[in-house]
Image 1 (cartoon, rainbow, N blue to C red):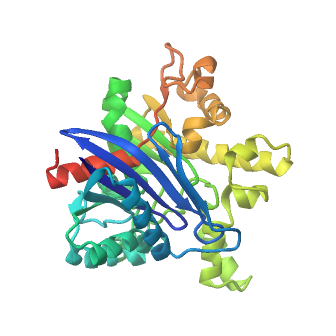
Image 2 (image 1 turned 180 degrees about the vertical axis):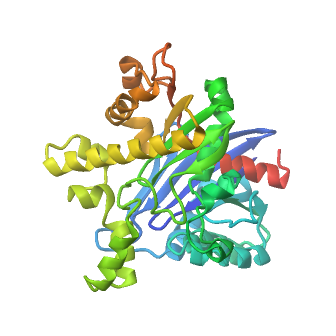
Image 3 (image 1 turned 90 degrees about the vertical axis):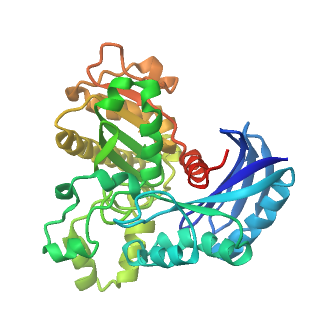
Length: 394
């Protein structure tokens, strides 16, 4: 019977899991899956390491599951999945660690109280991060748990890049650019030397493009700027999130359109982005295959916002040596990568069309002054490795 680690990643409408088996220092995934659509039409799927279906379940349209109900279902499922393995630890993605919690930590009840202090800084995400932690503390108190923070990687960002031009007292109480998707960027930084040693020691912009999207400027594999700021709605246009928005628009919606804070929150988090502009869907695959003019407009705006952010991050780096595409869209949408790289030609990016169709890993020509890569991210593996290290396993 082999030792195993389960990684849990609880979001606002989904809970992902991944089961890793330990063989000494070696760590290998044996199953992964998720419950998605918790608030609309919950669906569960589990697959083995080869992508073959292990189990699935649908609760039906119009049904919803609370995070507690979803976790209860997952725990029951995982008991069956782990019959041949000995569960020795659980690793969690926690959205916010503030300025003090910058390294993965073993969880106890006192630490959970500390996590709760960051709920006002991430009210739509932090409570969901904590739900499975609380459940396991209550129902399996002797099971070691480790928290890995999505903000930690960005704590190397210089203070001047974290500041908003507000009275400094607000910065001191947490109103600053935190940056997110840190576990994804940390993974890319850890494997970048295997692809491009120059990029790992140089100036690289990583594009994490998925339903949530952001970009990170790295110098010597350390974060120096990120498109996401105080919250996970800032920066790039996303699947259902607006990205950066003139604060005057928020004030207008409240004072002139009579919208409540909750209505504005739902608008910018769940009704905007690709979905809002297209009026069709937040799925980039569907938009790319659509002939609807609004689908084209949504994609045009998505690419434009990437180009604006790329220029800003390259300026923060004072130059550019490499681009890295990752995340579901970044790894799979070659048409989108083509547009981004073509528009970045003035920076020195020269696209290799054939390599791009094959999804790389290198998608720039050998003579391109700025290299371009497609590197799959693996936040779950990053969390599993941190859990292994914190607990001294293997």
